Image (cartoon, rainbow, N blue to C red; front, side, top):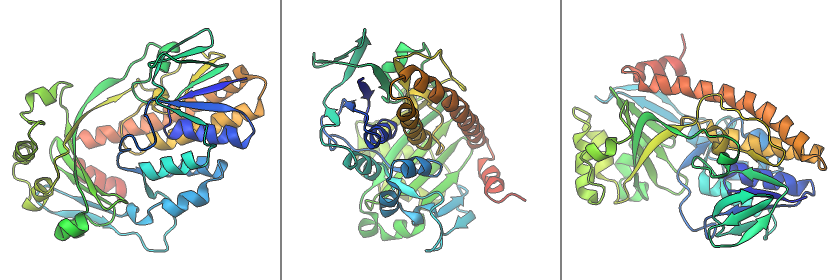
Length: 369
């Protein structure tokens, strides 16, 4: 019985790890040419997903790479008013630590046999138990698991649902080696997350384990084609930084200094989600994990749900090694309920962030009463 996992993200690799622990063969097919082919992005807030890492026997390794100080948070208004500052004590429990995406991926990859991941295999289609890849190669499967993210190709085998834009566009920038290059800005941002909320836009800066600070400028209630009309010249980094600063009128000079200090990598991202509470009729030979199954607003739940998907599907398959259809049905029933609740909570948080008085609402959220 052959299990094929398409996508070497958190969900797919956790599933592969669980199957390996239980003596079940599986192969991960990943479009990247190698683990170092591209950057993996910023930090992840891992909370409920720690259960998955315990099940996978990786919790000690996770604690070694997790950043407890990443739980620090500062919340401000555009005029520079500090609304909230939370600094994590050195001996605080790792309830919601941050971890670099690349470090988490390496932890999972290093827990697998060398031949468990087939790199450079971009999935194209599947039919009659055969996978077809962009390079012309193919492979057989008895169970296909789509762990191929927001733009999943495997998803189309189960549902016509597609991600839709939610009225949010983000420009991502970065300050590398900030402690050396801009120590004043490093001290301002601190060790964790630094949020500034205005009317219809926000700045989110976050310290990463590699010494850089990643910054996202979030523009809410904007159309999907907003970048085309924003006046941001992405092919001219200096002019793009100047335009981004122009889009922050009246903001304290300390915040615009963060944008001015950024390097030349300026990335636009349109935020999309799958329909809330998406389900599909169970198939005996195909299922989904992670963003492929339940893409939700980026407010800290997606990666945790993906880790749990991989662990719990792995446990279900281990409990029914000769009955994949039953294992898939059990997994999907639990997954739909769990991730549906997480998606509803994420949508509520997204609505809060979209509000004109988001800073005050967040303050009330973090300090109720």
